[in-house]
Picture: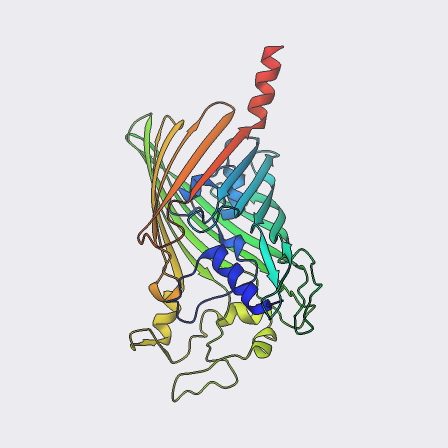
Length: 405
C-alpha cells in the first residue's frame, strides 16, 4: 500500500492544511485538535477561560469545579469538510458529575470517521476498501484549590486505525500499516474572579490547559514514531452584565502545539551559516516526547524562505506557530445565546482563518447549540462547516420526573 501517500491524504482530509505552509507542525491523530462542540465553535474555537459548560472536558476540565449544574451529558456532531467529501464525521460525547461545591469527575469520548478509502498498491491496483477511524476516551478529576482557583488532571487513551487492519496486498513492495495507540494526560488550571459592579456581578477568568502530554504513536510497529498533538492553550475572558437579564462575554485564546518541526536547528545536519537543518525521518522518530515539547518553543532554524523568497527569522517563526481565537457571547436571562468568533492561523503555518457564528438556548433540562463557519477564502474546505450540540441536565430531568409522580 502507498503508505506515504495514504498518510498525507488522511492529514489533508482531516485538517485541510493548505500547501503554502512553511515548516508545518505535523502530528499523528490530528482529529484531537478539532473543536468538537458548537458552543466553543461559535466563538472562534475557544474555551480555555469561557463560562464552564458540559463540554469543558476538551477545553479545560478544571472548569467543571465551577459549573452550576450537578450533573449532565452532552452529544455533539460535526459533518466535517462537506465541501470536499460527504462521509467524514466527528462525534463527541461528554458528561460530568459534581460531588459537591469543590470537586467533580468528568469523561468524554471522541470518534472521528474518515469515510471510505480505496487501498491500492504501488502500481495503483486497488485491492480493498477501508474505513479509517480514530477515537479517544478520557476521564478527569477537577477540584477547587481556592475560592477562585481550580485544577484538573485528565487521563486519555488514544487509538488510530488508518486501514482497519487490512494489510494483504497484491504487491510485495507494499508497506503494511497497523493500528496505533498511546496514553496521554492533561493538566489544566482555571481562575474565576467575581467583580461587583453597579449593574450586577461581572466575572474575570483565566484558563490554561496542557493537553495530550504522552507517548508517541506508531503505524508500523515502532519503525516510525509519530508525535501526538501535545498542546498548550491559554485563555482569558470577561463577562459583563448590563442588567439582570442581558450579559456580554469577551474571550481570547492562544494555542501553541508542543510538537517539534522537521526543519530544526536541533537537526544533526543544521548549518548555522545558512540557517538550514532538516531531520531525517529516522532521526525525527528518535526525539522523545518530553524533548520534543521543549524543542517546540525554540527549534526554528536561523531562517526559512517563504514562497516569495523572503527570509523569516527564527523568533518570528516561533510566534507564527501560535494560533489565535477571539469570541463574543451575548446571553439573555442565561437562556438565549448569540455568538461571534474569529480564528486566525499564520499564512505560513496553514492559513486556516475563518469567522464563526453561533446560537443556543437553554431550558431547565435541555440545551441546544449550533455553530457555522465562514472561511475568509472560499477555496478553504472548512467553509460552511456546521456543528450541533445537544445537552441534558440529568438532575433537572430527575427533579422533573419526581415532580410528575
